[in-house]
Structure formats: structure tokens, C-alpha cells
Image (tube, rainbow, N blue to C red):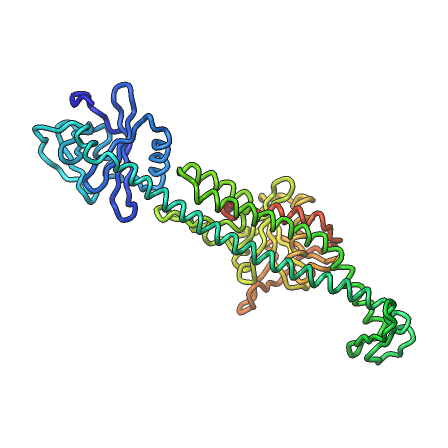
Amino acid sequence: MDPHSPVVAQRFDAGTIDGRAVVLIRGRQPGRTRYFVWSAGLFSEVSRDDEAAVRQVLALSRNLALTRQLRARCDAAHIKWSSSLYFDLQGTCLLLTRDGALKGIDPPTEPSALEEVLVRDGSLAATLLEGRLDAQRMRVARSLRSALERLRRREQAVRGDIEKMDKAIDESKRAQMFVAESVRAPRGTRELKANDWETGEPILLSVPPDVAPREALERIFRRAKRLKEGRALADDRMKATVLTINLLAEFAEAISHAATIDAIDAVVVEARRAAPREFRLGDNPTRKASVQTKALPCRLFQTARGKALWVGRNAAGNDALLKIARPHDAWFHSKERTGSHVIVPLERGKDCPPDALIDAAHLAAHFSDAREEPVVEVQHTTKRYLRKPRGAAPGFVVVTKEKVIVLRIESARIKALLQSERSTDDLRLPPRE
């Protein structure tokens, strides 16, 4: 570099990496842009010919907090080098110290050439970038492990549901052997006897107290019918869960071999697409997560037309959800059942679209203790007609004006809605009106 050909500072990014003060500088020389890294009193240039290194520097700069002091005092300054880095702005020189601070100095009389500094510490940029790469790789790998643990717990839960369904279906087949006996047995009978159709061996069936034998069998048949209808949905959920587990395992393997920040970012994008609910990448410590995103008490689904549907996570979440809902937003709940509140955000003066109304009612039924029933009553109104009594239990509200839907559950619709779930990172609350 010709010491008489100045490099003009264009952009500064500063912060701390692994406890070390780091400054990234983009400078402009006639006909070319140059990138420099400074840390602990040492200085290094990133070769413009190394496109991968330049991209990593730019990715690193996005994770450093911009130093206003540097920008205010050094923009358009001439970058010069002696034993340390300093900036010459119309005769005023500022020295960048080892701790990342600026102090005024007298202009050095014999600045050394840049090449001498680079020979002394030409690996500084690569060292810092390698540290950043390792930290990001560990961060993503940790998030992938957590997501896999959540998915494996879900796999076990779904497998348990399938076993219960199969057991109930088997019980209904066995109960068919007692139909004739139940018709003849008087009320008050506590035990039915029959012969196994396959083995001929005598078998017994207990009848609950205060239930007629015929009614006991009908209950078994009704429960088996409900569970049989949900069996295909459970199988689909199991297949989707296993597929996602396999995908995240492949992503974890890819992360262990990722050689650049761009490669890691590509894996993050794919992981979020494959498992938006389970893969939760920890917030960058240099960026404050918005209070709005951190405090969201709901899960986020959407209709086929992209309309948002908010579902409370639990009783306390239901209360919190009502605090962020506006008076004209639509509210849904499974009538006289325990379950989640569902909110459909609406514009003032607008009615809930028919497709969103049916979808919200399905979610209200699914996330309640009526989820296994083929027909469910769902109440709905706008939030302005809800009242929370003083001292009431979490999630409890009084509805002063409502409509009721007698909803016949569509398994395919439930499946599509569950697959539409998105990360609440995508949720932007509408402004209060």
C-alpha cells in the first residue's frame, strides 16, 4: 500500500468476542474497498480476494453493536498506522487503545507501512473469525439437541396415545361377545359372563356401579369409535414427528462440519422451516429480544388464507392472551369444557370470516377435554363481552353475550391446522386502537 494513498473510513462496528474488544472497519481507497479487523492493539486486513472471509466479516459485523463514538468521531477520517491504529481527521488524531476506547494523540511523525503490521499479525482476522465460527456452531448444535429432545418426547407421547387407542379398539371387539348377555342381564348386574368366540373359554366383563349393562357396552363402543377416528391422525403425526427427527439429526451432522458462518445460517433456516415450534435458537447476547416476542403467551396457527389464529398455552396463558387481545377481536372456547382460549385478530368493524370462524372453532375443540368427541359445542363472541371476576381462577371468564356452534369435527381440517403452526417469532401484535 502506498502510504500517501489514504484509506477513508466508511463504517465501524465494535463489540466484544470471547472477552476481547474487536473493531471491524470498512474503508475506501481509490478504486477499491478494504476490510480490516482490529483487536488488542493488533491490526489485520481481510483479503478482498477471499470472498468467504469477507462474507464472514460482514456476518460478524451484524452481531457487533455499532459504536456511536467511533461513527461520530471517525467517519470519513483517514486510516493510518504506526505502532497502533489511529485516525487522522483534519489534523486531529485519535488513537484506538487496546480496550477499544479512543483518545487524542499528536500525529506520529513516521507512520509505518501497513505491510509491516500485517506481517507481524496477519492471522488476526482469521483467528477472530474462527472463534466466532466455533461459538455459532456450538450455539446452533445446542439448539438442535434441545429440539431433538422435545421431538423424542412427543414421539413417546404419540406412541402412548396410539397404544391407548389400540387397547380401546381391542376392548370394543371383546365387548361384542357380551352383547347378548347384556340384553338379558337385569339392572344392577356388576359382572357379565360370556364365552370367547375363538377359544371357547369363559370370560368376564365388569360393569360400573349405577350403570345398566347395555349402557356400559355402548360407552365402550362409543369411545372406541371416537379413538378409531383419531387413529389415522395419530399415525400421520407419528410419521411427521419421526421425519422431523431424522431431518434435525442430519442438520446436527451438517453443523459439525460447517466451515463458514453462511453454511451455519443455511442450516438454521432449514431447521426453522422443518421444526418451527421445536427449534428455538437462543437470542444473540448482543441483541435484546423484544419484550413483545418474549412475553407472548400463545401458540400461532393460521387458516388456509393466512389469517392468524392465537391459541392460549394454558390457564395462565389464557388470561395473558386476553390482555393483548383488543375488544373487537373474536374469541372462541369449547362450551362448558376445560380448554384453551382462541383469538382471531380482526379489524375494527369487521366480522370474522367464515373459514376463520370454523378453523378457530376446531382449534378450540381440539385444545380442550372434548378433543376426542365427534360433535362439540363451541361458544364464540368478541372480547368486549368477556369479564374476569375478581379472584377468579386462572383462565376463567364470564361471557355476557355469545353464540354457539354445534361443530362436527373434521379430522382433515384439524390436521391441516396443526401443520400450519408457526413460530411466535413470526407474530407481530396489531396496534392498540
